[in-house]
Image: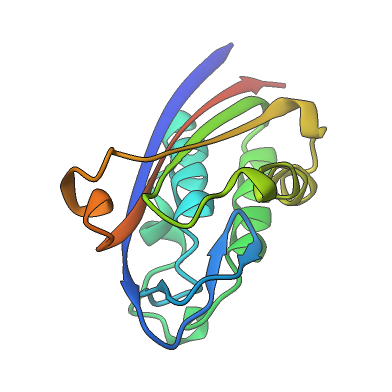
Length: 158
């Protein structure tokens, strides 16, 4: 049995925070605002994986009302999501994700993001695709108000 899930996340820019995408710290003058490290890419991937298995979303498993997740490393949370999937008998077929950001340019960090995601999912990097695009200065990402990400995941029942 195969199942497909979609995930989406968005966070606004904030001063005084690190910019973390796909578990990689990106040098930039602003970071993203959130309860955890606000890694929109990791959050979209987690929601895609959980959605494919019909196991809720990251807010179900790691609520922002729980202070123990304040500042949490999203790669640790992703590792936990993959453990939950395995406990329910699912493996990951592949993950395809897109980060939408006017700036910063991300091409130099894409492979490292793929490696971090693969490591925390316990799968080969060849099963992870990460792309980055702008919105040609349109919408909130184009106006540099924040960053968003979409992800699609295929999971298989072991």
